[in-house]
Each structure stands twice: as C-alpha cells, then as structure tokens.
Amino acid sequence: MGMEQETTKTFEELEAWKAGRELRIFIFRKIVPILLGLREFDLCDQIKRASRSVTHNIAEGHGRYHFLDNYRFCSQARGSLTEVLDQLIVCDDDSLIDENLYQTGREHFNKTLRILNGYMAWLKRSAKTKDQVIAPPHTPPNL
Image: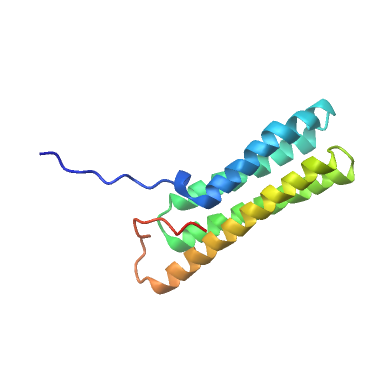
C-alpha cells in the first residue's frame, strides 16, 4: 500500500493572486496593445511591470511560509496595485483609453484591493494568534 500524499497548496489557490492575475491579463490584453499603438512605450512598460509585480509579490510572499514576511510582500503587491491604478488614471486623463476600459480597469483594481486587504488582515491576525513561525498548511478562507 502506498502512502497518500497531501496536495501541496500553492499561491495559485489564493484568491488575491487570482484577482491580481485577472488584472494583469486585462492590462496585457486590453491596455498594452492600445499604448503600443499610440507609441506610449514608457507608460506601456510601467503598467506592465506594475501589474506583473502584483502577482509576483503575492507569490513570493506565499513562498516564505512566515506570516509577517508574507504580509510584507503583500504590502509591496498593494503598492504595485495602486501604481497600476495611477497609470490607468494617466491613460484616462491623457485620453489614451476609452471610459469603458478605464472603468473596467478600476473594477479590477477594486476587486483585487478588497481581496488583498482581506488576505493581509488574515495574515496579520494569524501572526498575532499563532506562536509558531511557520504558517499552517491550510490556506486562508475565500475572501
């Protein structure tokens, strides 16, 4: 008889990462082509980097297996998320994208921010209530 293996939980199961991924895909598929077409190369590079940074930091924090380390990386992700919003506002202010794309981008931002804030609150509570350094094997509740 073989031993049963428990499936390893990865960052891909985190709702915050999933929301950040949706934002990143939206930026890449809907905003980047417009910016490239308008030869807005600097803004295009900035918004791509910032949107990628959101999911990169959530993933890296999850890999630290320590609540407070994870929280710090999520804080970095939240900063990058806010940077994406500012870049969307620039796109809107400079009439580079239409109102519908701008509003859709804001909806992605709001959803990701809400979920990320909930995850960060869970990490902070977990760090305070646990005497352990290593995060438990379970993932946070769906927020």
